[in-house]
Amino acid sequence: VGVAGFCGAVGKTPLILIPSLSELTGCEIYGKAEFLNPGGSIKDRAALWMVNAAIADGKLAPGGLVVEATAGNTGVGLAHVCRAKGMRCIFVCPDHVSDEKVNHLKLLGAEDVLRVERLPASDPGNYQNVAKRLAKENNGVCLDQYNNLQNMLAHVESTGPEIWEQTEHKIDGLALASGTGGTIAGCSKYLKQKNEKIQVYMANVISSGIAMNGGTTEEREELEKQKLSFSETLRERFEHEKSGVSTVMEGIGSSVLYGNLAHAIVDGIFECNDETGVQMCHYMLKYEGIFIGGSAGINLVAAYLLAKKLGPGHRIVTFLCDSGSRYASKIYNPEWLAEQNLDVCDETLR
Ligand SMILES: Cc1ncc(COP(=O)(O)O)c(C=O)c1O
Image (spheres, rainbow, N blue to C red):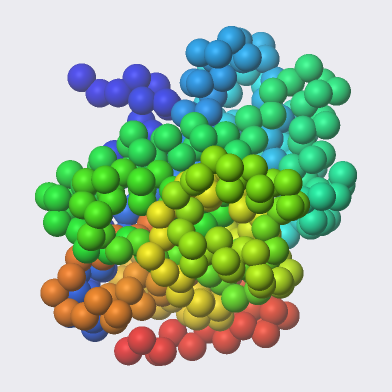
């Protein structure tokens, strides 16, 4: 009866039909309610899988230290999992991560939470490099959610199968933005193996850097050697386009083709922007009573665009990655929105 502890409660989230968006498009648009995970986001899955694998490999044991680079949600998931398994944790976040998330991490027992300037991956001051260095200096383990394929595996083994079952094997499209790429890689891998016709579209937040020149030449050559399934379209984007990582959305957008993202099987890309994503968040709260974070807003915009592209009669799934409560001082704060020049015209879709 019931599930075992925090870790046992991760996953098996409901698939919520979004009636208004479905009606507008003639499709069925569903959001997987990842904000209902016990740590409040989709990243609980990756956190659990990475820690379990590190324990199985003998790298982590009770009393051990995890040092992770995180936009916040992976940190929250890890902080819960570490407490549940008697481990310690320290986090390094990029400087745009909200105060709510940093305070939350401290409240959950993180020994330290550093916020560092957003710098290119090649810079020693880049938050991922700082986390790796701190782990080494403190005898800890950096789980490296960007390249640790346990992140993708969490979605191959849990999220993908849940979506397949919940849609009763009838799903036409998946649309979502990517951070580490764990979700898009794991779900595309699993679902396309079940039905190769399922269309997977990535939402690129304009100027998020997702299309920026990806990594060093050596990193790209290494990925090339591994003959990964990363779609040609997306690979070209990484190789030929340049932009800065400047989206206001937390947890999505990247300037490097990370190990997890490199496994994504993507049919196409939708260009989205911060403002439409923010408008979708406010629309969802006002007309559907669903309180979501910014990446979920972008995901729903992408789901809407995919529904329009495929035409009526299709079933589209996306992810409601976390709750709007994590962004009370940002996306849901009129002063912050005015500072960012973001207009919350939630009538756009009506
Ligand atoms: C709020 C939010 N949305 C989306 C994502 C992206 O998920 P993934 O890293 O699996 O690409 C993250 C990742 O940290 C996140 O925190």
